[in-house]
Amino acid sequence: MSDSFQEFDARLSRIVRRNTRLAHGYNSRVSRDGLIVFKPKRRRASLPLNKLMTLVIVFFGFKALVLAQVGIESYNQRLEALNEGTFVEQVGAWAMQADGVTVGLAKALWPLMH
Image (cartoon, rainbow, N blue to C red; front, side, top):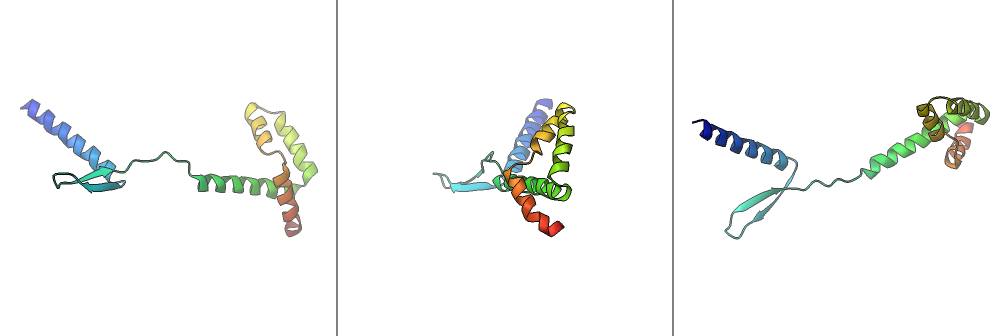
């Protein structure tokens, strides 16, 4: 009796696992014998490029907003203070350094903020 229950439980686990994969999308086709067979769609491990680009745009916008608000001299002083801190602070100072895009956006934001 226990063997039959283990077989049933294993079959039930396979069915649940297959249905879970089919819930994320499937392709259907008719086999040679006329049976309709459903196969789960393969998931592609793709990089969400639009979300990544949005994150980059928001990051540069934030840097430009801070630079336009505090000014270049104060911004550089704060970056120097960060650069003397821990490793994480040094990485933050490197990421927040004023580059061409940030300075250009800050110059465009300056008249709107002052």
